[in-house]
Length: 253
Image 1: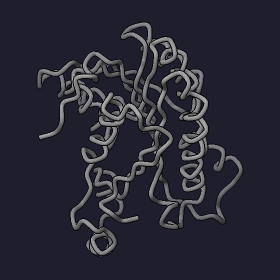
Image 2: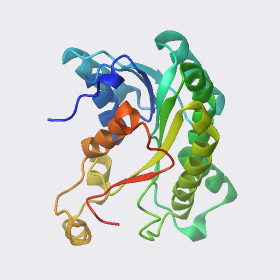
Image 3: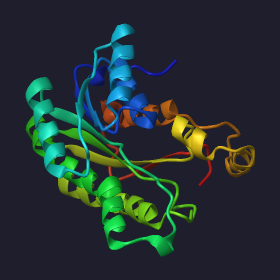
Image 4: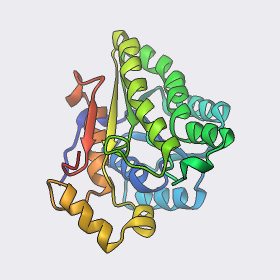
């Protein structure tokens, strides 16, 4: 049983990468709160399945738009459409990312730039697009997504860990710039979250044993655990929380 936040009802929410994994849990969580949820992704089939399942369960059907987040003009256009159709966006969940592994010796300038575009750049430009709506509405909540990876010195993906480290700097700076307008900016740092992708690619018996040794809590962390943190940060219950890092990792860090 999770909390119901009255302040989220009818609030317009925008989630990036909302078709699967943690993003889908956020979309579903906001829909269950009665929010007006919009999301973007490149996974059209998964997005349609998510929208249908929420509609069939009796919740407001989210508004989905196909969008490649490396195309900033398309992202900002999608945000503008949501503002026109659903009303000013007052919650932004900058969820989308891709933790593709890569060897530092193989990284080219083009690959580096693509990883920054996939994991960092769109977060800033989504903020830039929603901030005027939030200012006009008298405030809002922005939740950026970092990663535990660089905090625990993970190797094998230097462009990803660099981008995710930069998200925390983005959060701190934008919280200062937007605070006078009642806009809160926070970072959520997920641990190893058991999305289907993570399970399929990397969850071996040895890896799971190592994870349980590393975590204080000896249970796996799931997408809903992260989504519940995002819901709280979006709601008025966290109204004086900004410029902070919120870790959901079972006590691994």
